Length: 629
Ligand code: ZN
Ligand code: ZN
Image (cartoon, rainbow, N blue to C red):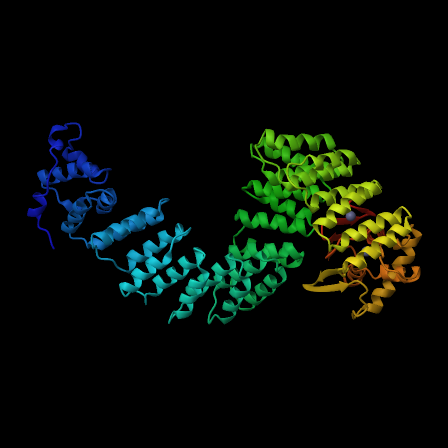
């Protein structure tokens, strides 16, 4: 159906062209006009001029011809223009389809595809690659099977690129089983195919399925490893993520920026400071220093490992900071007992006209809470909605209850909880309970516990706290009643366990552990420490031992608490002056808290314990939590 110049001249020229002098192109302006028409009408005017001045029509921008006429009745006219230009028609339409697919209106690509079908324009593999791209972008509720059907009908189903795109489309539109079915049926797959499937399964939270594929991959690249590491981090398996990263390093693969972020997040979760530091060095050597996400993750990692100074230096070295960086730093300072510095940093941030977000306010409220600045905290709480339009979330309410309870304003805290527009959760009641415990209000503590047990009936931690409160008030019968209640409800005490990492090896201690290689040494060192501790006023607090046994037996249990074992192990196996970092699965008990304070003074070392809810930084006989946790 080739067209000659003759038939081009015979195309209708709109009458209006001659009458509209203003639009009439001159030979100087025509060059620009060939690329600047916005409607089929303008196109036809230019076309008329081309004919009149004997200019070559191939100078017209054909992709513009296609896009301007795509959805108008001038579609056949555009086709003719394209055909006479001599360029293959599907190349022009495909490029138009590509532009639509990449635009912020990918639906136009699908509309154009429908027109191409309607007018029998020749379709090829490129057509479908761009169409699939558009479909993926609007995956929501889109049925990929329609496109799949077309591809099969045109015999393009063996095209690996299209197959990969189809697998991707099925997976992102939530049709995981279709994606897997197609994946299984494919006679050949490349690394891209596997990576698509793994990445999408990870995104859907099906990490075990993803790992099964990963395990069976004939060949893996950095992307495959990174997706899998990210998957483990997201589903709360940081240890598996780190193990995988170690294997990846053994394969001599070079981690990319995404890998670095994922591994750092895993380090933050389990407090793997040594690896975190090594990744930090690697990241600097690899020129990732300007990557804001990496810097933000580093700040988070250092804070979660209790290394405030390192977090601060990452923050200070950042050339560009986002609100995430500021909020992380403010929060980090606040929870590590540097409230004043946190507030100063906030002032600096406001001065730089950076708008705070919800997380920033959590940090500010924590800071006020730790410093007992009730008025200031209330002012921040009001300001977040009034000045910044941020609706307080449950975390903010939790902070406010913490602020009031900590300051001993228990009635006000109780009133605040009653007036909350959202249902209080465990964190809110937990904060209230903390205040009741410190300020020795048994009645209100009982109320808090009642709510907490309703929310989480099998959490042994609450029973322990309640029993402690009774024991402290010398209400032994009540303490015994709590133990009975625990038995009746079938609450099993989670065994406490603490871990410490030395030279890249993690050592785990369970409460009562006697099986460790260095058990004898630990025991001897503890006895020696104990003598000195007693001289400094340490008295074992056996009220935390919820067992019906002799007092001497209770003391024996108490001295075998996992964090004590881990700390003593750390003292034996690290050089003088080195900080000791412990991770504990449960809340640190009152007795260990007191013991670690005294030990930090005796051995003149910093002891950082991250328990289930927060950080304790013991130094010179004091703790950063100010005895409130
Ligand atoms: Zn303990
Ligand atoms: Zn503490």
